[in-house]
Image 1: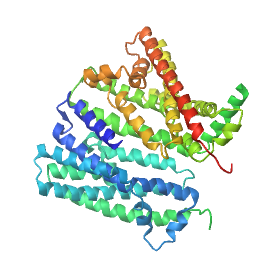
Image 2: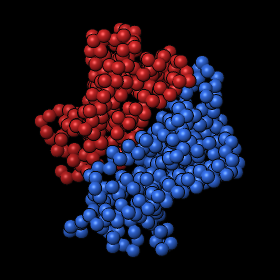
Image 3: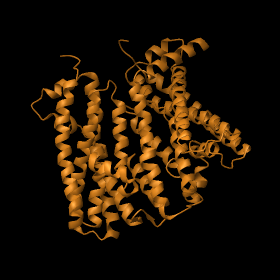
Image 4: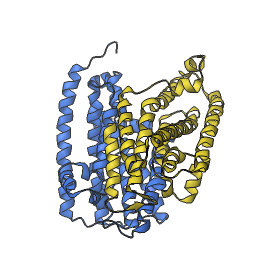
Length: 228
Length: 264
């Protein structure tokens, strides 16, 4: 399933570039590299994180969050990092291979790829914290599937280069809800290093981490347990 | 039978409208993707080109809008509840009722389709008032809407077939996502089929996929499709629907023999 998704995404970009030489400021090689990084982040997210957001909706709806809140473990870690999808591990290998393959035209060396991996993980954590912030809406709605669906739609925003967005949306999704930094920052820094962009990414991740933590503490007050 | 059907539709309608915020978010999500991503992506692609492969920017945005709207109308239905009913043993009651599981789900589908139809009509009126699309109420448009009903029925059958695989599979979401991905890529939801290589396009026209999105979009947006082509398209989709119907009943018969329910 993941392989099909990756192939369809790559072929879509490839078909487009049969008709145009550039999309925005990027050529085919740069765009395909960006797409490969998107797929890598998606594969890691799908394997280690994604399932936990659907589980959170079950916990809240069925009143089972008590058992997790009572544990002597950090709530966020216990909720969002508990379940993994082992079957998706293969897609991480595929994602990594695609990144290495599409990095060749950009002349990225081993150090460059290692730096990219560090930036990808920072971007991934930013995505997780932003999704946690969005998922806190589940504590205020009776039915939680819609919030998860909205979360998936917001994920899609991060899967495209920021230059395609109108300046208003670009500013909103870079500074207010910095989902555009998740993939754009690591890729742009590989193409041309920008210290300010690195600072924005790190700052956004740290701020999102604290906001998600305090928002969780606030939101859990509205949780109604089923049993206790 | 008709009374039972109508009452079941009313009950399913009430169930679906129970969580209105959920319903709203299921509409807002794709609308967000359309406005935030598709419109802006294509505007960016067309920055240095006035025409790409026969499409201008306004033609492409209109195409993507109809893809979004038709997707809401025809491909919104999913079989999560069908798989859960089988997995959790809730179909036992349907084996006793004077109303089959298949008929119940048809009623469910009709209730769902009615809600989606209202949502799509409201969205279309809003877009027309905002000047984003030009709506031409022609005979071809009405034929396109009728074709969309056929596509919705076809999609329901695919989803029902995936749902009843729950007799064998613990989780059917993989199949749902797989079919969704394949349909999305090959039906012209992402790119119009003119952008695909010719050899691939020729192969695709042998499958039902182009008739799910590309063909009805072309019908509704009043492109040059002759009436006999529309009939031909409808005929092909009806044949695929009949094949799915036969396959569904075969799988149901095999699956129900495996089904056991204890303590119900």
